[in-house]
Every structure is written in C-alpha cells, then in structure tokens.
Amino acid sequence: MFLSINFDKFIQPDSLAKNKLNSLVMKKTATLFLASLLIMFFINCENHSEDDLITPPISTPTPIPTPTAKTYNADVKPIFTNSCISCHGKPPSNGAPSSFDVYTLVKDGVENGAILSRMNNNISPMPPSGKLPASTIAIIEQWATDGYLEN
Ligand code: HEC
Image (cartoon, rainbow, N blue to C red; front, side):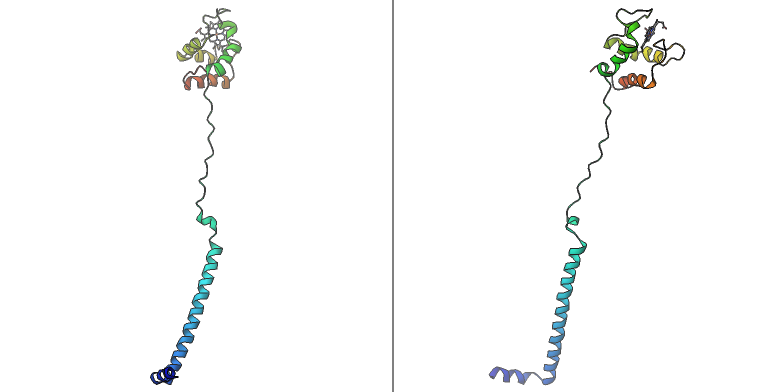
C-alpha cells in the first residue's frame, strides 16, 4: 500500500499509458525476435547438412597402369627360341654366322644395331622366311629401352 501510493505519486497517468504501450511494443518485438531466431535456426538446419561440415574425402586418382618392363628371359628369349635359334643356335647352322642363344650375345646384337636392322629389313629380313609382326619387333625395342633387363 505504502509502495503503491509512492509509485503513483511519481508516475503521471499519461506516462503510465506510455509505459504500458512501450512494454507492449517491447513484448511484441521480443516475440518477433525469438520467432525469427527460431526460423533462422530451422533454415540453417535445412540448408546446411552435416555433410557440408565434413571435409570431402580426397578422391583417389585412378592408377595409371604401368606396363611391366620387358626382360630377356620372359619376353625376348622366347622370340629368339621360336624364330632364330634354328640357325643362330650354338653352334650356328644353315650358314648363319652368329649365335644368339644367350643373353649377352642377344644384348650385344641389339646394342650394335645388327639384330633390329635385319629384323626390320625388307630386302633381306631375319628370319629369312619373312619379317616378324611389328608387335614382336616392338618387344625387342622396348627391352632395349627398358635397359636390357635379364630377368
Ligand atoms: C633359316 C635360318 C635363319 C634364321 C631362322 C635366322 N637367320 Fe639370321 N642369318 C641367317 C644366315 C644364313 C645369315 C647370314 C647371311 C645374311 O646375312 O643374310 C644370317 C644373318 C643374320 C644377321 C647378320 C649377321 C650376324 O650374325 O650378325 C643377323 C643380325 C641375323 N641373322 C639375325 C637373325 C635374327 C634376329 C633372327 C630371328 C629373328 C634370325 N637371324 C633368324 C640365317 C637365319
């Protein structure tokens, strides 16, 4: 009672109305503010999924198949066994002057150019029966490029 009397003394009826209006406006503003906060919260959840927060996995590049290097034993020797050894064996036969039956002799013959120049020769090819397929000759060329691997 004492307090209410004191209170009324200092507050004019006009200003009391103003205060009421102000608090109403404040209430409405606060409600709007809270509502917009809620809306923002839900919009955020909708538009930004958790996936956005997770760093995308680094895509593993498709491995480029590396062709295995050609070796004497696996790739070159079978060609000589099939197409050259009948004349260029040990000892050489059929008038052939050289043996191409071991790694070092074949390597030397390719290195000095004699073997490939005769294998690619249109006039007097080796074997004498006719040039071998280009893909077969390419194996020997690749073997040279790969560094004359034995195994
Ligand atoms: C049917 C027998 C015969 C076959 C198979 C044969 N050669 Fe010959 N090769 C000869 C004769 C004979 C000569 C010597 C005459 C000449 O140079 O044409 C010779 C010569 C060569 C020469 C030059 C001389 C030397 O010895 O360096 C090379 C290089 C050669 N042959 C490589 C080959 C290669 C490589 C193959 C297999 C892809 C092959 N030959 C298959 C008979 C053959």
